[in-house]
Image (spheres, rainbow over the protein chains, first blue to last red):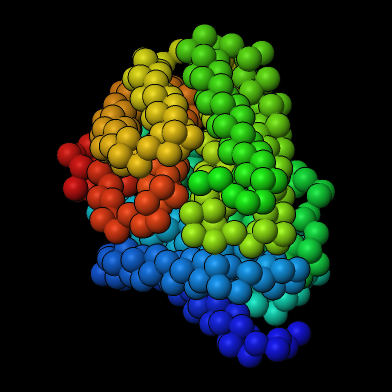
Length: 239
Length: 239
């Protein structure tokens, strides 16, 4: 709602605008990282790595803006929630961009080695992560708690695809140990993408909190079983 | 400094006490995870995994306490910094405990497979991470900005040990592909420990901010080169 002190709304607006810009930047970093992987484009990967600092710059701006608001305006209720959510969401977006930059960094190695088949599944995993990030940022900026919570099912899908990919890569490197180096980096990139899904889910829950004032009580049941893969043999079903 | 409103200090105290308990819990979770790995103790690993919820409970308490303080007391200056730092530090401690629990989870798989030699180096990496976490929590609770910043060099050491271990594991699995499953989980546990060092470093910087009011401008130069391992062949020096 509007405030008597107009400049308060102006400053809240700056915070939202900063989040929107930071989110857009993280989105394009993730898109670029996947393009660099798919196109074996080391020059693009280098740009993604270099631009990670810009995302950090946005986070610093949002933190300073939030602290200024808390110190000078002492917001309460909905406004306090928005400022605190902005602080935490900025942290989640920074991690998403950081994981995208690390994927780009690893693609530099992959581009020096022969292409391995599981890359196709990795790109599919990347597309899923991309969609999640876009949707959750739209939901957050649109203050849409319902849409945000729906995102959590998408994260289960991402975890399932990740677990299957983990097994695929494991099989592939066992069948051809010469691919161990490539497959190892593929596994870490896959893990990065799975983590990006977790951060998107955190943003979804922060959106729910920011809009409704209630934290999401129902605990998430993670279905990423890759930590269990290997139990009782070299390549069993996940325990 | 003491406040006119005594109950304000009481509530700030609760926040610090919550952080101290949460930090102690995360420390013992990490210690237990390393014990479970070294002793191939699946029962201990199970307890570590089960207790992760308790750490999350502490974070919820700290978040609620911080929000209550911000809403009812509108702290400024040093008090505002302490509340915001507590919010962020609690998030970092939660990640440390979560990574320890994931290491415990992976140890369940390793206990079902033959012991692999790089485990010795992994335990050494774990001990380094343990020391970092203990020191940074002591520095934070002791409001010791100098001691906190000194921690950042320790993180470089951890990154160096991690990069060496990454190469060791890669060599080991290439020489004996039957160890690929074990070595893969070893790699992810090593990555978890390296990440724990990053979170400890974040706590160090938050401590510096909390005590001095200044954020750490000097950017950290990460020396973890494992993302680059593999450039130009199957096992070159890090690029």
